[in-house]
Image: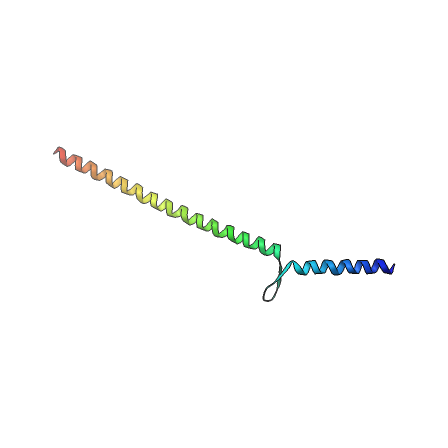
Length: 86
């Protein structure tokens, strides 16, 4: 009976040691390494998403400006052609 209790105590101490190894100490709190890794990956995905959204917005603005310029160029070409005919 005593040997079983000691065996359970050793297993408990070993499991607590493993839990301590998997924790990262910050200023006032402890965080598990897996939670920290998941948080960092989530932050990376957020940053990449924002960057892609900015790139898409810039592209849309450039395409809009290009379209406006092409319309103005066509108007100028039509005006120049009409001046040549007169």
